[in-house]
Image (cartoon, rainbow, N blue to C red):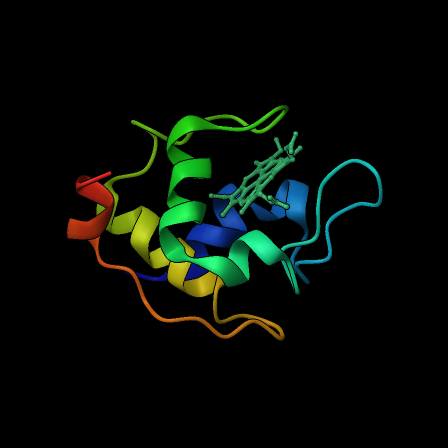
Length: 91
Ligand code: HEC
């Protein structure tokens, strides 16, 4: 499962390839507190959606969500422990 590919296909149009987002429109994911916090918190944003951001429930499988979350949590300056598809299923 290629997390970078999933990010480019599903997230980069808003959050940008460099993870810096667009000022006052799309938050940066590089250095973002939620992204740094826990994979489960990021998973909840993807499952539920938030504000202008659509839910990815149905659009991405749990395995795909895990791959893209693990990518953003370890891309750019971010470093975080991986989350598994099973942990996402449990949410
Ligand atoms: C259509 C544009 C759009 C797409 C596509 C999108 N997002 Fe978002 N995202 C947003 C917006 C807007 C917010 C801020 C929502 C709010 O707080 O009101 C956000 C918020 C977030 C947050 C929370 C940031 C914080 O500061 O709490 C995370 C994490 C996130 N997005 C990750 C992703 C990931 C991963 C993907 C791809 C699977 C993705 N987003 C796709 C627009 C988008």
